[in-house]
Image 1 (cartoon, helix red, strand yellow):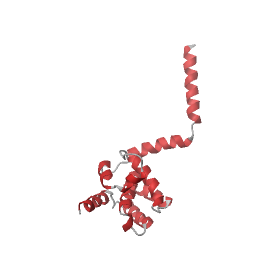
Image 2: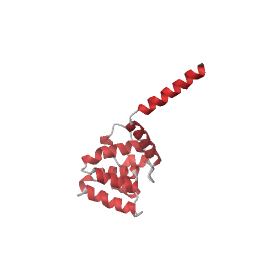
Image 3: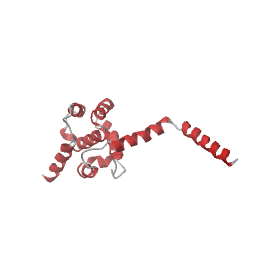
Image 4: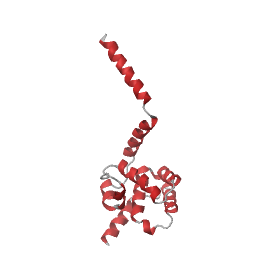
Length: 145
């Protein structure tokens, strides 16, 4: 009798899980993918030198997923098209794309055509000739100067 009751509860849980919106499961998968997607630059370095992105987040930017979320939020404000963001993510991954957007935000006044700039970096990434590390280090050198 107890065994049937446990079995029925398990079926109920499975049915309830199946009813959850697909977007909830997609968000869970997306976060996992972001956490797997890493950068050659530690997040502490990005956080220390990409300071403008902090104005667009309520978090302390301790995880890559938080940086990606902030970059997705600020990209349209910078005039970046969704298609350009998607192309960049496809070329270099979400974390690298987010670091690039964070660096661009710090230098936004100097970038005349943000979409063109990001597309050019995407082409370099596809060719294996791009890393966000030098962009972050350029911001660090700018602070010292």
